[in-house]
Image (cartoon, rainbow, N blue to C red; front, side, top):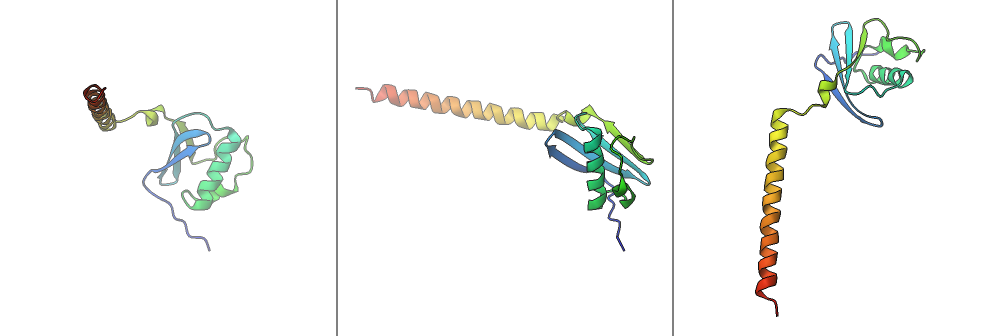
Length: 122
Protein backbone atom coordinates (compact mmCIF):
# COMPACT_ATOMS: atom_id res chain seq x y z
CA UNK A 1 0.00 0.00 0.00
CA UNK A 2 1.32 3.40 -0.96
CA UNK A 3 1.09 6.32 1.45
CA UNK A 4 0.29 9.72 -0.04
CA UNK A 5 2.73 12.37 1.22
CA UNK A 6 1.13 15.45 -0.30
CA UNK A 7 2.31 18.87 0.79
CA UNK A 8 -0.24 21.64 1.40
CA UNK A 9 2.23 24.52 1.06
CA UNK A 10 3.99 25.47 -2.22
CA UNK A 11 7.08 23.37 -2.88
CA UNK A 12 9.81 25.14 -4.90
CA UNK A 13 11.93 23.36 -7.51
CA UNK A 14 14.97 25.13 -8.96
CA UNK A 15 15.75 23.51 -12.30
CA UNK A 16 19.03 24.11 -14.10
CA UNK A 17 18.47 22.23 -17.35
CA UNK A 18 16.50 24.08 -18.70
CA UNK A 19 16.83 27.03 -16.33
CA UNK A 20 13.50 27.50 -14.51
CA UNK A 21 11.88 28.03 -11.12
CA UNK A 22 8.82 25.88 -10.52
CA UNK A 23 6.39 25.96 -7.60
CA UNK A 24 3.99 23.06 -7.03
CA UNK A 25 0.87 23.90 -5.05
CA UNK A 26 -1.78 21.47 -3.85
CA UNK A 27 -5.27 22.94 -3.30
CA UNK A 28 -7.43 19.99 -2.29
CA UNK A 29 -7.82 17.92 -5.48
CA UNK A 30 -6.44 20.73 -7.67
CA UNK A 31 -2.70 20.80 -8.45
CA UNK A 32 -1.23 24.07 -9.70
CA UNK A 33 2.27 24.06 -11.19
CA UNK A 34 3.65 27.60 -11.57
CA UNK A 35 6.74 27.98 -13.75
CA UNK A 36 8.75 31.16 -14.24
CA UNK A 37 9.53 30.44 -17.90
CA UNK A 38 7.80 28.67 -20.74
CA UNK A 39 10.79 26.51 -21.68
CA UNK A 40 9.39 23.02 -21.00
CA UNK A 41 8.19 20.88 -23.88
CA UNK A 42 5.01 18.83 -23.47
CA UNK A 43 7.13 15.69 -23.13
CA UNK A 44 9.28 17.23 -20.39
CA UNK A 45 6.17 18.48 -18.55
CA UNK A 46 4.78 14.96 -18.62
CA UNK A 47 8.02 13.52 -17.20
CA UNK A 48 8.14 16.20 -14.51
CA UNK A 49 4.54 15.46 -13.47
CA UNK A 50 5.35 11.74 -13.28
CA UNK A 51 8.40 12.54 -11.17
CA UNK A 52 6.33 14.67 -8.78
CA UNK A 53 3.82 11.85 -8.38
CA UNK A 54 6.55 9.24 -7.86
CA UNK A 55 8.18 11.40 -5.16
CA UNK A 56 4.86 11.96 -3.39
CA UNK A 57 4.51 15.69 -4.01
CA UNK A 58 1.20 15.18 -5.84
CA UNK A 59 -1.36 12.36 -5.97
CA UNK A 60 -0.14 9.04 -7.38
CA UNK A 61 -2.87 8.99 -10.05
CA UNK A 62 -0.72 11.42 -12.08
CA UNK A 63 2.10 8.88 -12.18
CA UNK A 64 0.35 6.99 -14.97
CA UNK A 65 0.40 9.80 -17.54
CA UNK A 66 1.16 8.19 -20.86
CA UNK A 67 0.58 10.72 -23.64
CA UNK A 68 3.02 13.64 -23.70
CA UNK A 69 0.87 15.30 -26.41
CA UNK A 70 -2.28 15.15 -24.28
CA UNK A 71 -3.39 18.28 -22.41
CA UNK A 72 -2.95 18.50 -18.66
CA UNK A 73 -5.07 15.93 -16.87
CA UNK A 74 -8.21 17.02 -14.99
CA UNK A 75 -7.36 18.67 -11.70
CA UNK A 76 -3.98 19.94 -12.90
CA UNK A 77 -3.10 23.43 -14.08
CA UNK A 78 0.28 24.43 -15.55
CA UNK A 79 0.73 28.22 -15.31
CA UNK A 80 3.54 30.46 -16.54
CA UNK A 81 4.09 33.09 -13.84
CA UNK A 82 6.82 35.59 -14.72
CA UNK A 83 6.52 37.22 -11.29
CA UNK A 84 8.59 34.33 -9.90
CA UNK A 85 11.65 35.78 -11.65
CA UNK A 86 11.39 39.17 -9.96
CA UNK A 87 13.60 39.89 -6.98
CA UNK A 88 12.06 41.13 -3.78
CA UNK A 89 12.84 44.55 -2.37
CA UNK A 90 14.84 43.12 0.54
CA UNK A 91 17.01 41.02 -1.80
CA UNK A 92 17.75 44.08 -3.93
CA UNK A 93 18.68 46.12 -0.84
CA UNK A 94 20.95 43.36 0.44
CA UNK A 95 22.66 43.09 -2.95
CA UNK A 96 23.14 46.85 -3.23
CA UNK A 97 24.56 47.01 0.30
CA UNK A 98 27.03 44.22 -0.55
CA UNK A 99 28.14 45.89 -3.79
CA UNK A 100 28.63 49.27 -2.09
CA UNK A 101 30.76 47.69 0.65
CA UNK A 102 32.75 45.75 -1.94
CA UNK A 103 33.47 48.86 -4.01
CA UNK A 104 34.37 50.91 -0.95
CA UNK A 105 36.70 48.20 0.38
CA UNK A 106 38.42 47.68 -2.97
CA UNK A 107 38.82 51.46 -3.37
CA UNK A 108 40.46 51.71 0.06
CA UNK A 109 42.75 48.78 -0.75
CA UNK A 110 43.72 50.36 -4.09
CA UNK A 111 44.49 53.71 -2.38
CA UNK A 112 46.63 51.90 0.21
CA UNK A 113 48.59 50.10 -2.52
CA UNK A 114 49.20 53.37 -4.38
CA UNK A 115 50.38 54.98 -1.11
CA UNK A 116 52.86 52.15 -0.52
CA UNK A 117 54.14 52.33 -4.07
CA UNK A 118 54.68 56.10 -3.83
CA UNK A 119 56.19 55.94 -0.34
CA UNK A 120 58.76 53.21 -1.06
CA UNK A 121 59.72 54.09 -4.58
CA UNK A 122 63.45 54.40 -5.17
